[in-house]
Amino acid sequence: MTSPVTSSAAEIFTLAMKGLPYVNLIGENTNGILSDELTHVLPNGARIVLSNEVYSDPEGAVFEAVGMGPEKEENKVPFLSTLDFDNKIDSGIERAIELLGN
Image (cartoon, rainbow, N blue to C red; front, side, top):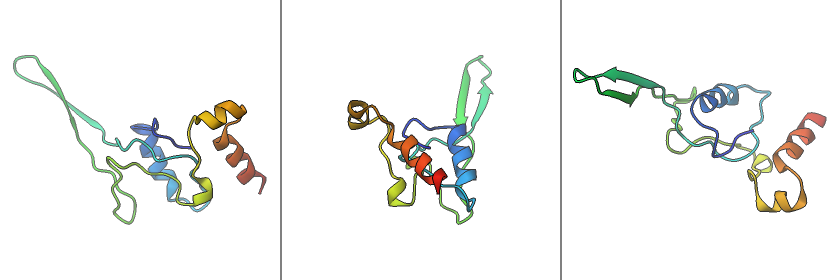
């Protein structure tokens, strides 16, 4: 299950999992901030942190700034929607249970 608040290491995990044949992504696109940090301390003691990695899938697609989400239309489910809140449901969990039941 992914959403716009899925970021950093969770996105790297999502990228690794999405290539497996038995994995279904459910939800919305991730945040798109996959890069690891490279930390340097400057001579004056100031510390800077720079993006240090470029992650891509086996086909070479890069998801930085765009994120990744479900490819199947039926798995595109809103995260924390007002409609779900009003109906006291979680569409993502409901979709996951439906897939697991099959």
